[in-house]
Every structure is written in C-alpha cells, then in structure tokens.
Image (cartoon, rainbow, N blue to C red; front, side, top):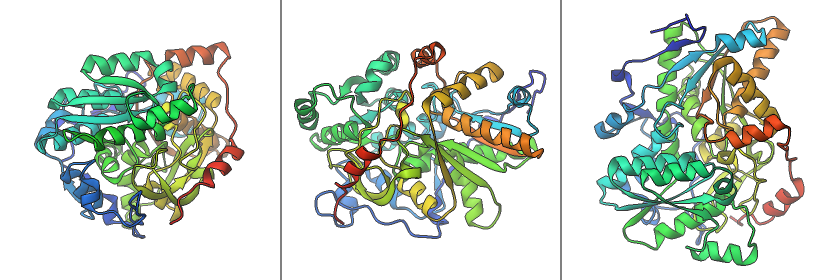
Length: 456
C-alpha cells in the first residue's frame, strides 16, 4: 500500500510476502568463482576444512549452485519481527535537490538491531543451533554485525562472544552496551583473550584494530573450542545469500510503485549490504531479463574495489581464515579509523569482486566528510538519521540525482539504507562542528601490504 500524504511514499508488503527462498547468484554467474584455498596448504578447501568453523548446513550453502535455497520456517518467523522492510520514495529529498529523478530507498533500519545484519545473523544462529552448537565467536567493525549476532543469539539461545574493533569500541560505546543487553560478551580487538591478540598488542600496544584482526581473533576462538563455531557478517557466499531477502522484496515493491530502477546503489565494505539489494537484480541481468546500472560505493580510506588488486589473499590479518580471490588492499593493511567502521575492511566479497571483474558492476570511492554532508541532507529531508555506512550510498544517489537534473532527464534511483545512525551521534557531532577529517588513500601502505600477498 502507499500513502503519499507525508510526501514520503511508503510501499509495504504483507507478512506473507517475506521471501520463502534466498536467491543464489552462483546459479547464474557467467564465470565460475575461483575456489577458496586452505591458509596452510594453499590447496582448494573442502567441507572438512571448514567444519571446525561452520555448521555443515552453511558449508553446503557456501558451495551450492542451486538458484533458490529454502528459508526454514523458524527463520521466516524470526524475520517477521521486522520483515518485510519498507521501501520509500523520497519525495522530500527529490524536492530538496530539485531533480526530476525518482529516488527510492529500501530501509533496513527497522530491524531490532537497527540494520540489515539480522537477515544473516538469524539464519546463521538457526543453523548452528540445529547442529547442537552452544556458542558463537564473531567480530564486528562498527557494531552493527555484533548487535545483530547478539540479538540472534538471544532469539535462538546461543552464547555469543564479540571481538569489536578497538577504534569502534572506543567510538561507539552504546553499540557495545546494546550487545551486552542482548547477552553477549564484548571485548575490544586486538584483545588479551587470544594468542593472536596478545601478539599484536605486544608489537603495537595502541593498535586501533581492524576487521582483519578481529576476524583472526574470532576464528582462533572458534577453532580452539569444541562448543563454538564462527559467524561472519559479510564477505562469504552464504552470508550474501541470506541478505538477498532485501533485493527480492525490493523487486516486488518497485513493481508496486510501477517503476523499475535505472541505477541501483549500495555501500560496500565486505559486500553483504550491497549484494543483498543488488544480487536479485543482477540475476535478472545475467539471465537477459533486464538491464541496470549497478554502483558500489566504498570509502576513500579503504577502496578495495576501486584501487585494490584482484588476487588471492587472506581474509584476515592473522592468516587463519581461508584464502579467497577478491579485490584486496592486502591483508596486512589497517584502514584509518573512519566512522563507517563496517566498511573498514581490506578486501571485498569474492562474488562481488568477480562481478566487478566481469563488468557487471562499477565502483566509486567517497570521502568521509562528503558522506556525512549527504547524510545530513538526507536526514533533514526524509527524517531518518542514516548510519555512516549507508551515507556512502546516499552520496552517490544524490550525485546521480544531480546529474539527472543537469541533463534534464528522468532517472529512477534505488539504494539500500542499511541502518540507522542513532548510536553514531558522536560522529555527527564532529561533522557538524567541522572537526571530522578526511583520510587520503594511503598508497604507500597499500603497496607495502600487497607485497605480502600469498604466493599461490
């Protein structure tokens, strides 16, 4: 249904329209994804190699080429706490920009944890619980994934240990408190609770941490305990698979609006948010059913898609996770402590990277201050305060709308607003005070990190 009275048209699906199956883009790819490799042997990895980290159901999803994978009823029931999420047409933003473009956004900030992350957290928690797992070890950057996994642990009765990147742990204390309220144990990473964390702190006591470091700690934790599995919030195939509920709903909602997007935009750090919205639409492109312009928006401080190399690299800094072929800045690269902590990752999802190599998507990098400018513009027009991560997509959407104005053409723009910014007010305070800083692309540090790519 739609209500245009507020000048923000809302398209809402009934609860029975929650997708019954996830969309698996592997079924439609033009190029077969290169296999992940064992971090020790550099040989293609098998299910037995992944069993210490993941339940078998997720391992099978990771390698599946079935186009549709059924969503279990308990997961759909948990999704019903917040799904289907709304699609909005941003009339007030269009008016503020004086653009003929039609701007739509899918809003994932309605979830209990405040972002899109529960789409996979609930799924991973369910499959772990089904296999008898008692405890989950995971990492988090900005805290969105950690919040989601903590919430999912509460839903399905799992203990959760979260290694939170030190920079975000210090910047976002309320995210930590939310995780603890859900029942999780949260420590700053690098921490003193793992061998890897102790080694990093011995060398760099004031390390700001990184997602790569936090992943190493969580992987070590899971691999050394029989009652524990590891849960990842982005990058891997099964994680992106679970997020496709976003795009599947958006396709139905755009049909309700009577339009099809010309441009589809998502912010990109590890790839889960971007893939969740875009993969169902890219699937249409791969099957020859439609044509779209797909743009990934990433931070200038960690531009893996725009300036990284496409190569096999470790997914973590401690070289414990599988080696995957992806766009990477080097696993030793530690991005600057931007407030979009969820985008502070040295690599990109192998599937998203492959799509970039095949020319199906494009990418652009954006500076932090320009993103917060866009976030403020959006909040004043639409009333929703965006998290720092999706301000990257908002910035690119605004640029597209202004291009349409200059060209005097209609353009339908769709982006994913993957979370709210209520716990990010310290960053907005710095932006409004003019003290937020931009970080230039650290070419020298990236070159140094790329020199350590595994020889495979």
